Length: 557
Image (spheres, rainbow, N blue to C red):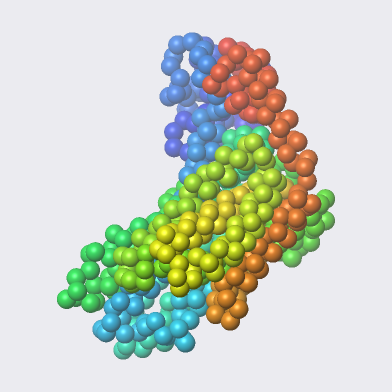
C-alpha cells in the first residue's frame, strides 16, 4: 500500500459525500477493497470506506448517473445560503420603517428620544440612507474580498457583521433621555449593518452561480434568479411582522412599543445567522483553474478594478449593469415615496401601526408574482430581453400613472375612480418589480468571469444603492414643488434610457450560447433515454462519457 501520492485510477471515479459536508470517494460496489488517500477518507486497515448511499448490491439504477452527492449538497447549500441572505437583505432594509412606527408610538418614557419631527422630520430618511451608504461600501469591499479570499470566507464575515449590528440596532437605548445620543447610536449601528447587507449582493449571486451544480449558463441564471426572488419575500415580511406585533400592545402600557421596536429589529439577525452556518469554514466551489491565485492575492481593490476593466466588452458591461441598476433604483425607491398617497386614495388616511402595515403588505405582495414571472421568462427570453423589456414596461406604466393622476384625483372624482387609480399604480408597481429588477441582479453573473464577478457585481449593486439615495431625497424634495406628474415622467425617461442601454450594450451572443446549451441538453436526453437524469449527466464534468453501468477495478501500485 502507498502512504503518499495519488492512487492511479483506470477511469474517473465518482465523488460522493460520506456524511456532513466533507466529500469522500466511492468506488464500484463490486471493486475489491483498496487503499485511499487521507484526503479521501483512508481507513487504517486500508479498506475503502463503505458507501452509506448505495447498497451492497451491484444493481445499477438510473440514480447512479446523478452528479455526486457532494456536488448536489454543495449546490443545495449555496442555494439555501443565497436565498436566506437575500431575504435578510430586504428584511433589514424594510423593517426600519415599521420599527420607527413602534418607536414613535412610545410617547414618553424610554421612547422620548424619538419623535416624528426629529432632525427636521428627516430622521427616517437619514437612517435609511445611512444603511444604503454602508451597503455601498459593503458591496464594493466584500465583493472584492470574495474574489481574493474566497466566497465563503467573505460571506461569513459579512454575515457576522449583520448578526452583530442587527442586534445592536434593536438594543440601543437613551442614556438619561438623551435623544440625539440614542439616535446617533442607532445611526452608527444601521451604517455598519448596511456594510454587511451590501456584501450579500455580490457574494450570494456569485456563490449561487458558481456552485449551482451545472456548467449550463441558463441553469446558472435560474439559480441566481431564484436566489433573488427571496428579496421580494423579504420586502413583504416586515409588514407581516408589523401586523403580528401591533395587536400585542396594550394601551395602558405605552412602553410596550419599545419592546416591539426591539423585537422587530432583532429578528433581522436570524437570516444572517443561518447564512453563517452554511458558509463558515466551507470550501469554495468555484472553478479556479483559469485564475492566477498568486497574482490575484496581491491585487488591491483598485488593481482588481483596473484588471477587470481590460476585459473584452468591459465598458458595455459597465453601462448595462452599473448605470442601468442606478437608474432603476432611482425609479424603484423614488416611486416608493408615492405609495402612501395611492393607498390613501382608496383606504383613507386613518393611521395606525396595523393599518400602515397591512396597506404596505398589499403593495409589497405585488412583487412576489412579478419576480416569479421574470424568473420564468429568463428561460424563454434570456437576460437581455427580460431586462430591456422590463425597463420599457416601467416607462410605459409610469406615463400611464401620470396621464390618469389628474382626472382620477379630482375633487369630484368618485370612490370608484380611486380604485381605478390604485389598480393603475399596482400595475406600475408590478412593472417596477418585474424584468428590470431581475436583470439587474442576474446580468453581472452572466457577463463577468469568475475572477472578477464578485468585484464588479458589487460595483454594479453600489451604483444601484447610490441611485436609491438619489431617488429617496430627490423625489421627496421635488414632488411638493413640481407635483407627481413631472416626477413620474422623469421615472419614465430614466427607464427609457436604461432600456436603450440594455438593448445596445448587452451582447446577443449570451442568449445564443444559452440556446445552444439547451438544444444540446435536449438532444443528449433523447440519446441517453433517461428522462429524469439526462440533463445532470451532460452537465456533470465527472461523467463526460455516460454509460456508468459498471466500474472497472482500481489499479493499485
